[in-house]
Amino acid sequence: MAGRYIIHHQPDPPAFYDIGLDRGDILVTFRIEQFDMLALMDGTEVTARLVQAQEKDPAPLDRPIPCDRGALDVYDAGSFGIEQWGEPVIVLAVMGRRFSGTFHLLKSKEDYSLRYIRSRTAKTIRP
Image 1: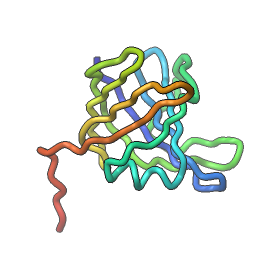
Image 2 (image 1 turned 60 degrees about the vertical axis):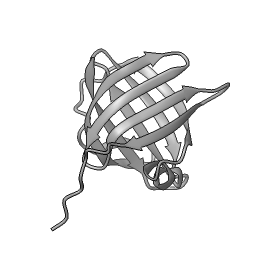
Image 3 (image 1 turned 120 degrees about the vertical axis):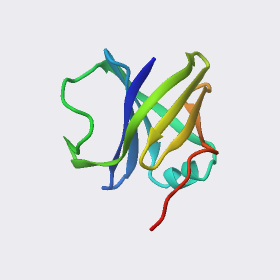
Image 4 (image 1 turned 180 degrees about the vertical axis):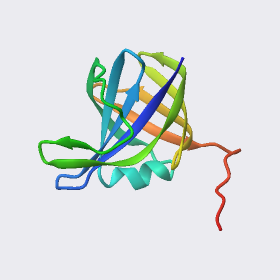
């Protein structure tokens, strides 16, 4: 099964990132802390908290959205494929502007541990 993902950034303190996974009929959202995003991009395991799994809002995901503390910026967006989705492991193949590889989520007692593994075939083209 394939879907779209978006990562929203809330820059106002306390800053955070929400990773929204559009699975067609539901939207699953995980939250990571502000400074963990750089660690995640470097391949370090970070804590991700399941924020919600709810019926999807028909509004498009690929633009900033308002929230109670101002607008959320779009940090990344793209598509994902599900390699495994079941407790305790979720593995997603992602392809976006900033992320190209896999997200590995492992359920712990209270939260998830999230690790990003960059694709070896993806190349960054610089002018």
